[in-house]
Image 1 (cartoon, rainbow, N blue to C red):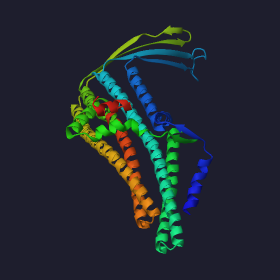
Image 2: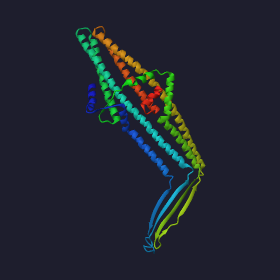
Image 3: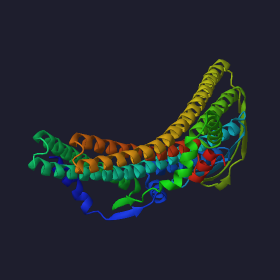
Image 4: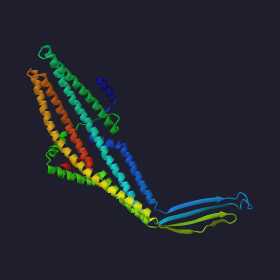
Length: 437
């Protein structure tokens, strides 16, 4: 059943053309293919239109009207009963208590908030692209390890068969070798499944028609960075954490959005206070009329100036107090965002240090485990070792290699996390910040 499932999963992949892609191309394709990012672009355009509409509200308001009339009965003739008119009016707010300037500031803040949302989504898409890219490479490396483990199990089984025939081992030892081989085959099949799924995720996020084949990561490029981060002292961690926090204060979109929300609530309090002020407006109207027998006559021009003085101060006071409560809530939300982000940055940095240590230690463990397996394999060939000892050595070699793979790609994922938290666009800028360059 397991083999059938793997074959069924492999069938669609056989008809897809593979396309080699590197990380930068995957990121570019993910950004271009992201529907959520496109949605935020539309929301930004909508916010800009709202800002324009608010500015238009401060311009003079023009109106044009037309009317026609005719008597249906009475003593007048049809001609005498005809009448028509055209009217034109202009109105303009002279003073609105200062609301226009406050509304302009609120709309500008709303546009910036939408832009920060789009910026946050930009980093979310980059994180998704990195996760899909690293996940595919990690699945491919895990599959290679599974294939290597299977080959070792097949070799051990072939030697066990020969020894069983010559009576050098018991039937139980042979069954153990057979079970090891089947277990390794199952792990290999699961590895194929994981690779197909991760490749499908990568294809979906990039929008490519064929199966994307990611270029392998050259971990030698990260050798110096891994070595230096693994040696960070507590003072180094504090210094790098402060540098990342400084970058986040300037660039993190979530923190910037929280600050903008706080500013917007401040402006809302100011706007609510403007309801205490009177307002003043002016209008000009004139018209052109037609009637029989006077024909066309120009209507008189009329200028109207009107003012409004609010007297329900208790209503305005309650509204101001409500807006002030919202302002205090926004200030608390900003503080919570600030504290949470600071903790996340320092936690992610500690994770990076731990992953760097894991990369170095897992590499050494992998090297020693492989040598131990080769040594036990040679002893088994010379009939100086048991099958159980060889199986233990093979299991240790397989788990050590898996741990090395996870540590390496875990370190890269930590770098992606730090990049997003700090709002840092370029990988080179993050590297320089971590190395204190």
